[in-house]
Length: 78
Image (cartoon, rainbow, N blue to C red; front, side, top):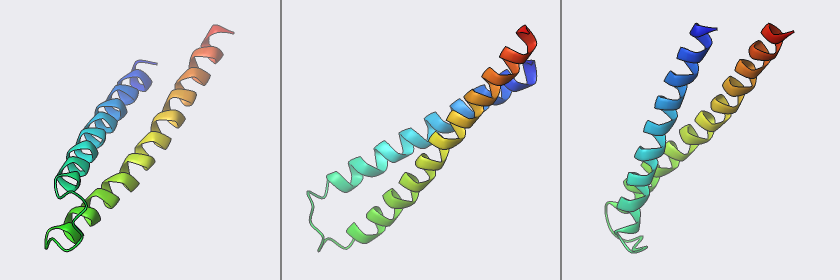
């Protein structure tokens, strides 16, 4: 059980890191004020989109990890 808890904590740290990177990437894109002609726009948008995809995967991993952990907890209480 301790290994599952440690794994869930690592997943949470990873998830929180991805979330912070995504927020920073979105802020950099917002700082351009929607100016799609800015030379940095395409690169910032591509970075934000890649982080968004990774963030969505992280959310899925977190819910699977939590569900898996709860299943072990329930089984050990039977």
